[in-house]
Image (cartoon, rainbow over the protein chains, first blue to last red):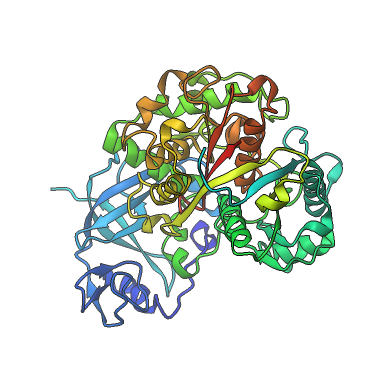
Length: 137
Length: 390
């Protein structure tokens, strides 16, 4: 299974709640209770104001594509049989930016600014990856 | 010129490549020793004059990237009293020069030797872009299969195209112009002429970047000697003064880059210009990191040679080629000369040779002032040096 060959996230103290959330089909991000800003990726303190007063909130899972690339030559062998595929940076409604794949769309149709929503792709018992697909109105 | 003379580059050295490889199976330590000895001979200095030592690399013991100053200084028989193994990617060596100037100014050393080497082409490929672990901040990126480093630069290129209408043809202008410089440099790895069409027809790696938008993968070694004004008086070659320097970094992972179209060269460039007391129009020759064509375009904008979004127009009509009015990457760059993984030291070596008027066919006429800008990581770090001759 190609899926099991690519490097899986090593869950740590920062990311435990994030990956648990994904497993339950919730995209959990942090919010600073002092300065009010959302944070991605999760960490010990707010990178805006250094407060440790951070709350976990569920993202709407909606956002827009900030940028993307169609990969034709992967570096890791596990991705060779998936080309061409799209890796994108998505700006979530909460204002934070994260990387993911854009799926359920022809790779030639992907554009910057395109509205997308999260879908969850289980990989194994521990890891479910958040991916994104176009919002079809 | 009225700038302060804080420190000068008085020696540079490198090694020859054959088809991008060091000849005869030389090890990564051997080629650094050769480059270091050549740089010291160039300066007219001895090994025992060296009291400051700087190095960074992807090779290392006991693991990739570890203890470069300890290893290389031991091999050379140098026991420095000032040491710096700053590792911020390909721009590390511009940062090393800045740190050497500061250390010399503070009286902590007088003769600084900066050394780099890589046998990634002929030997084992080590580190650099081959990031396959999914730990710490990379656990949120690696599972999605972005090929590093090219994928990060592709994301920046796509965003620049979206925001400003920049085209693949405009990026290709950079690759074509750089190849023309390489044709004038006998030491360059790739010297066959290419056209914009060749770039666009080369295989797509990670859209919108084609194979010919990407730097070479070669071996290489280089060394630089930086000394105090007092020591510069007794050196063989004329001093090339470090008139200004600056450094900055903005992120590690590409998802954390604040704006994919603006690099930290905004800050590092501003610092270097202010320290040197010169303006953009004063610069005669520019050497900027060209890991990818987009790196050049973003860097020229961020340094302020043109406005944000105008980089595509700026490089059009072969403006940066030999005979154009903006001489850029005059040795053929990482795109056509060599790219051993951390290219920044070769930007400095070429700038010094240009300012000494040693460049033969590719010499920029009467070059007095050069700007060098290294970029490291995934558009993450920049370090700028402004160099000048008396």
